[in-house]
Length: 323
Image 1 (tube, rainbow, N blue to C red):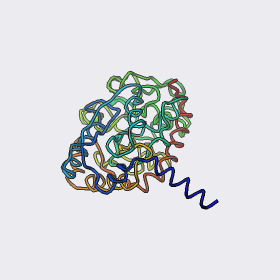
Image 2: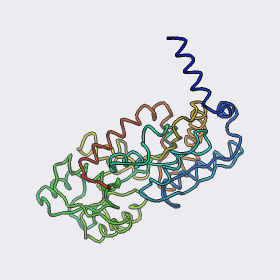
Image 3: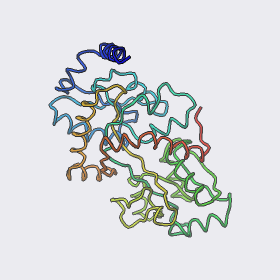
């Protein structure tokens, strides 16, 4: 039996091209394509370009960002799932990668099994805001105000199943609120209509809301995540404002196709983590509305499947489906 097992293992190893093993010790020897399923100018794309520029300088090879958008991120993600697992085609993506697993009954890939988590490099911090005219100034006041008007107030989002939909759905569920969800095709109109008072609340990236808050058109209520945002340190988290355990943060990370050799994954993870941990990169990210946060390969991998399960619960609470 032992001999048969060894023979089977040897046979499986023979199916893996010898070039993969050779590349493991010398990687990278040629240009790398970093596919992102988000359009140019988004926070994910911006973060990818900051990291890839430094990776290219470090490794002396081209590390090119390839924006393959469409189908809520499915097109670009599928391209990486089908790519050779050799470290030369990678995915730079965000939390919706795992959200999609719960939103769609059927995907052309498995968000967990078809990928290897490499490293998380930053967060896109977000905030709950209300119109400046709203008679509330903090989360406790907001909850009390909405509870006194069940079903009469609304929150906007950038679309069904987006994090800007899921986060308010989770908040209203945890706080026992009844609010109407008003989805838009994109976040710009959602926040514009909140600032004008047409809707009562929205959840959006801090970088998107900052200008309107400074202009006195929006009020900051609370930020998501379990620690305060660097960009708005005076604004409390939802957790510390009373809804304990509320933690909705959109991360930005590198994934590799399943089957990518562990030593290549570790090399990418180590180098990207070192880059993201520098003061200069932290400042560059903050200027772009991002918050550098490194979660190393071991920790990111350990929590990857569990986070997918967490998002599945949030999607179930929201009732969102995109099939």
